[in-house]
Image (cartoon, rainbow, N blue to C red; front, top):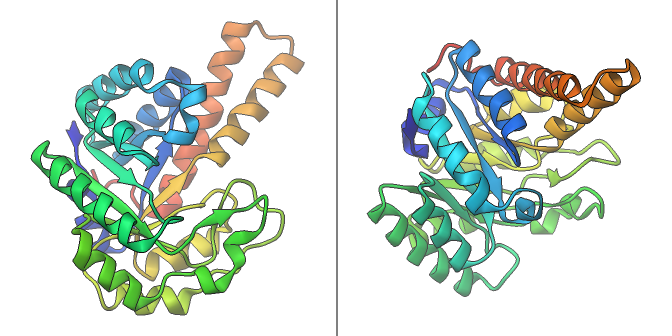
Length: 278
């Protein structure tokens, strides 16, 4: 069933488990994530991000993702991740996405808050939810996710929530997008301070590559939504390489790819504690 973030994150926040956002760029990844969620009886968040559109155009992928969500036996949020422009966020809402993220975190605060507030107003009229970000979740390739003076402060989080009214808040505590070159050091004390003072569900970006203990500690500390993409790509890539090495045809290799991604999604759902929570 197609739902928005509030339908899955409020319970996750109270019961201390995480709901995974698994970005998908094609029907192979979509099939893997939906099948994993149904087998695990787990709520799930799927979608795509603006930086991924060169690999799966929004107008092409949206109908299949939304229809799969509606047919699913578990709650499925269709989320537009890291929307960088107002126009693309509006396109996602018009196409039927049940949630969007506007990411203005690298710009000036006043502009970020104003644009986010306007998107919240419009999205709520659609019955959709909005995720925002304050602080800076960097790029693993450059290591800027480790710059602690760009981490989210409690005062920033509180002001941003007051100014925007977002339904979920992505915070920076030491993670980064992409494949890590060195082990990240997460600021769990900062997470505990923020989660203890606000009621809005918190989001961890840059989840791929973290240790199992990092995930467990982050969720125990108040993270309700965990974003995963790179780990799915690695699982699919490894499955394809093994399939072609075994001499399989393209179609048989494709099925092996789906199973490889599905296995990784199931592993993450078990780790996040969302199994049986649908």
